[in-house]
Image (cartoon, rainbow over all chains, first blue to last red; front, side, top):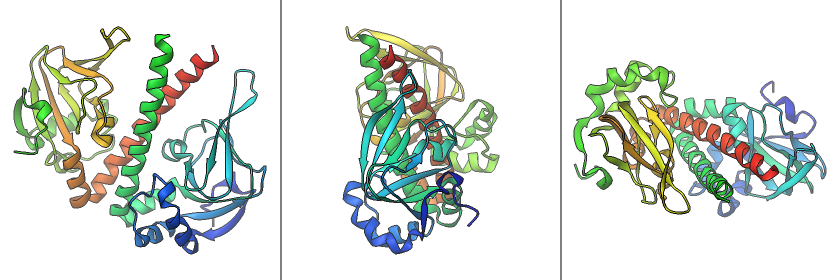
Length: 171
Length: 171
């Protein structure tokens, strides 16, 4: 489909996420985004998402590029890398199944803050900005639920980052 | 009404925001939250918000307290103060009409990151977490629009804060 993100064209597309919805639902205890979602809600949401597979070593998101999707890992592990002032990628996190990545660029379309690369064979579901808009139009109640979670997650991260910044400023 | 935030009990309550909706709509060019909202959408949203008035010097939000509302200034000016490591309040921003404050605690209920006090006579509209939930139930499409804006605003602030933190860490 024309809507698939160009930045994922090098990875294998496994179709829409519907058939993965039991697996997605099973990850809820590890997933802030889908906390309290019923199996029916996960299934409904899955219609708006696609599944991709990446071999170990494959880049999934590249720091500095624009982006229009977020993803949730359902199998495998991903490392998050940010370039330092000498332009050398430094690992800043390792992310496991149930975790989400790329929310900020999905929403604002701006440059990716960091790169993400599979460190083992990885399967993930993708929600694009276009599909989120479609979800808002067709399923506004479910969209509100997702958006509340995103606001909550970003709010928590902003608190953590602001607290770290305040600590450094006071040193 | 029982739903009014206890933390605002010392301020004058001017009723629901419906009669202020033309004034709120006029502030849209200065207001990230309501960008692209039609007069009808502002009017609808106003039903879920209340208006308060604060004299110069009055505290509106206190750092460290829990919170369950956000606000948008419609008249006046507010200073934002954060305590330093010696517990002395330091002014970190001055906020004018059209700007919003308190989004994080409205969403996550955690401690206010900073205090806000009126520096001139100030009028503001308040959206509580309870009213946002009511908006999601009764007007999910409008709620999605507001939530998309909140996600966008928090994403932008997280980018700015993360960029500052990275700068400090690299020094």
